Image (cartoon, rainbow, N blue to C red; front, side):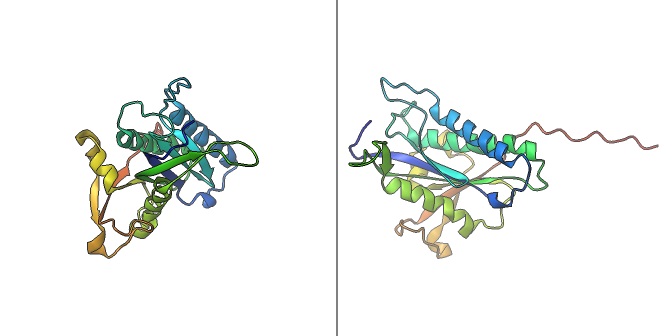
Amino acid sequence: MPTVPSHGCVLAFDIVGSSKIKHIKAKEFFRNFFARCNEIMSEGYDGRTLKARAYRIKEIGDGGLCSIGYPFASLTGNPANEAVDIGKRIAQALAEEAEMLHSPTPITCGIGIALDTLIGFYPESGTKEYDIYGQALILATRYEAMRKTLFEDEKSQSILIIQEQVYLSLDPSHREGFLPVDLVEKGVVVRDDPAARKLYYQFIRAETERKEAPQLAAV
């Protein structure tokens, strides 16, 4: 696994209000959801050429972090495109798995994506387990956290928030649906990215197989 600095995307996701999920099948829901996330990230894995859809960095509470383009090479050559696709698929998996809970309110997530430096390393002592650090990891969590700053009242849909550099790295087809936020105009600063002047966001309408109950005919 590489231990030299490089650039890549990091995706951070967090389930909104996860502590309020009170259901006998809550543990099963979380287990199934994270298993599906890992399946998405592991797609296309090739240990010989070190390629994969993404690399799972860690799970944090009821969310997680993964990197795209480092340490595994991008499958398509554009980590920004792949990160956006993964974000949408994670939101879709969440909606589908949440069906078992029959929640009266939608169970959604916030997703942040940033592009910057990443560095892989092995610790000098203890378990020799590969890990990653770098500015991209920090910024992805900061952009995900902007959900609470800018969209606290929008909890009925999952939201994808991306750094301007990520947006500019997307192919035109992947830019569709994103809307800009002028941070300077709003007087908002992204923590650890004070020079940022814009970010871009998109609400994700996940499709589920839930069917409407049939209406009884009037007598």
